Length: 401
Picture 1 (tube, rainbow, N blue to C red):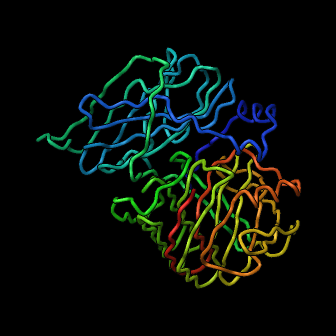
Picture 2: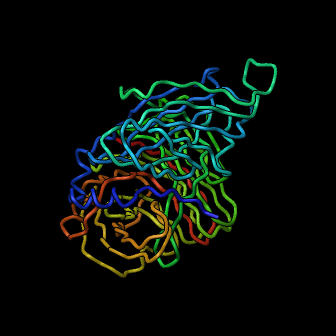
């Protein structure tokens, strides 16, 4: 079963409507990466919170829970979040109880096991002008490095001060929230699991070892957010210092991607790929916006079928030495980053295939806007390899600035 976080709720939708959210919201959007990080008393666990969307009378935030020293993995964890005056929290991917101006969040079945040195993420939205801080974090299971016995739990608490402290995520994560993909008709489904903050990405100076993931997972590696998702068949994604590799065999649908969340409209994506699909597949830039909910593709190459199949043609745009056909298609009651929804897909598909070059994201966003295709608040900018009812492999070097 796919588990997809609900990344918005009614207050967020109303606020976005009042603020006339559109592609222009992206230009100066600064993620409010904050609002406090905390270690457990024995330093085996840590938690941090970052506001990802703020409309004054409310916000949405991501919480990162990291296993610092429990080997081989935790069996569970708990985080208490101080709301500092905000109300009505609506978390996803956790079990929670609320009392006395704070709420306690406990792992669910799929994200309780966090490997040593890894992290998992969950999120919530709330009303009000107060901003959250971490009040306590506890972990259970595993053996704390340096300890001779298995530890059941540890905790640490702090006052619910509203002062800010910066937060960052570890080099990898074991969150298993799902991401969806494209159908044979050219439509692509949802993606889940948030993580990582925007800005300029990492590069070849990264010294983290290669990281292979073969189960649905979202995390960070070398300054970028990665997400790997498939439904049936076999496949793996290997995160490298310069990008990522993907291989798949007899899958129904698979997405491997690496990029920035939320990223920027002005992102310049430079890439080169050894791209070898055997069947239906896409290579390009991919992401979502919220308010309105839009799934977007900037496709530079594909396999045996050129998406999205010719329907919904809107016009063309010339960018980075090539001409792209623009399409708008609709997905009805399909998985998304906000659960099962009806939403539009925006496409720029290069007329001539290529497997290396530069993609200037703003050129496409601006062209869509001129055609009345309005984006919302940016959720991600990622380089993606997607396969549908096919096999294949790809090795992608990518950088974003």
